[in-house]
Image 1 (cartoon, rainbow, N blue to C red):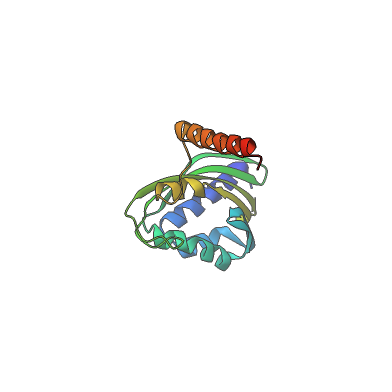
Image 2: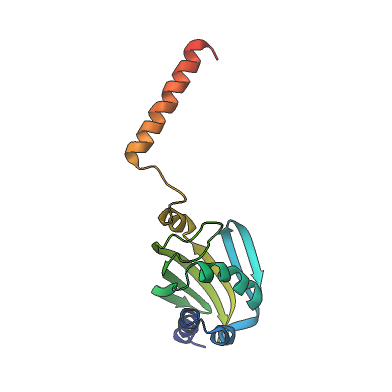
Length: 165
């Protein structure tokens, strides 16, 4: 298959996901499909369509209107890389967090190996930190807050050094 054909397979997979077309998704995944999810929160190697569906189900349940959009896609040989945008509304429980009604947007980098028109392997890096920040679960200190934290830590260290502890 050509590189354009391989990119078309990934586009069909994303389209099937957006339409919640389980058969369409099954049609593009190889029988021996394996998904590698290195940061979810521990590395996962999901073997088979059912394992993949178990992984994606919490996202679909928590964000029932979740839509994926391919922002960039490139192929070389049997490998296809895509930058994917996710958008949805938090309407169901997600990792113990009750629905917030917040609209979220996050992204992923996905690399797929396509053989004979089917996805054999899938690697995905999802910006889960960006997602949980938007839900109000995690914060990253901005520059001013970071300076305050560092000053506070320096003062504690100075105090310890002056008391000999």
